[in-house]
Length: 262
Image (cartoon, rainbow, N blue to C red; front, side, top):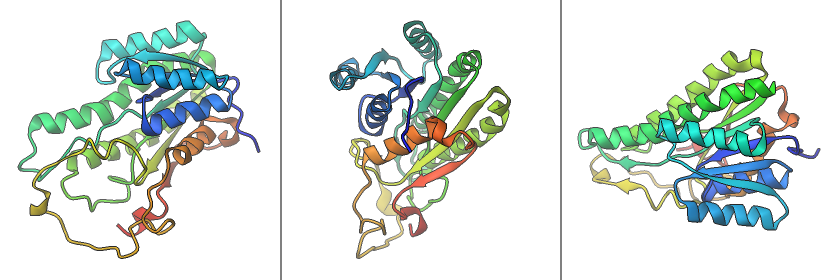
C-alpha cells in the first residue's frame, strides 16, 4: 500500500514547526501540493524551502487562525494559487496556561479556546465551500489525549476543554459533511517531541497536582520516550488519502499507550 496524495491540495494550519511542519513535509512527500499557514513568515519559509528542495510543491500563507478576515483571505489565496482545496489539517494550537481554575484569568481561558477551538472552526468554515466545489474533501482535526481520554493534567482545564470541543466538532461534522463526500477525522496525540511543551505556562500547579510516579515512564510502548512528529504526520497523511476512503468520524489516539495509564 502506498499513500498517494498527488491529486490533493492540502492546507496545514500551524505548519511552521513541530507536528504541523512534519505533516506538511509528509503530505508533500506523498505528492500533495501543500499550503502551510502560521504567523511566522520566516519559519514558514524554512518549511517551504525544505519541501521544494526535496522536489515538492508548497506555498506559505501568513495568518492568525483566530482572525476571521485573515483566515478567509488566506484560504482564498490557497485556492487562487493551486486552483482548488481538497484537504485541511486543523493543527494550529497552544497549550496555553495551566493553572488552578480560580487563578486562571478570563483572558487566559479565552486565548486558549480561541486558538484551539475557534481557530479550528474558522479553518473548516472557510475551507468547506471549496471542498464542496471540488466534489470531495478530507479534514483532520488535531486534538489530544487530554480532554478525550486523559483528565489527569491538573490545571489544563482550558486546554482539555478546547480539545474535547475539537473531538466533538469532528464527530458532528463527519455526519453533516458526509453527503458532500467530505470526510472528517480526529487525531489525538499524546506526548510528542515538539516545542509546544516549552511554551506552556505553568503557574501554582503544586497546589492541585496529584503526586504520581511511573518508574518506567508513562508511555508503555517506549518506556517514557516521547513520540515523533513524523509518526503523527504519517497517520495524518493516511487519513487524508484514498487508503482511508471509508473512514470518517473516527478519533485515532497516537500515544504509545500513554492515555491507558495516566
